[in-house]
Length: 130
Image 1 (spheres, rainbow, N blue to C red):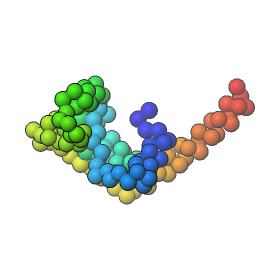
Image 2: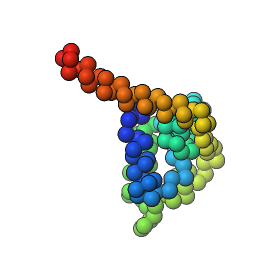
Image 3: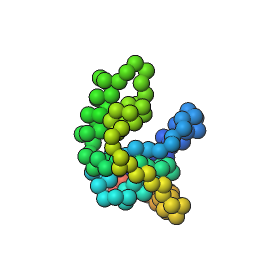
């Protein structure tokens, strides 16, 4: 699944308990081929701006290859953010950042609340019928 019911908790842990400042999320994968659609949904789900480069549709294999390259080629104490900005995407000029509109964020929150409640209903149904 693209999203799960723990994503909001993970973001809360990072930002509230670990004091991580997240300026934007950088997304990639085939789901981002259609400009702006999943970028808006992802932004609403994470309550963060979501950036994609023109190469975002290249998919997960490219992403894991970039992470492997970072591990092998990074300078001593070089951050992943710096490596991506200065070495991987330095010549890419087609970055687009989207922040979901308030209405979409509210709609996603309502969906997620219902989704979590439905999980409990499913557990009860399994106990009764299985």
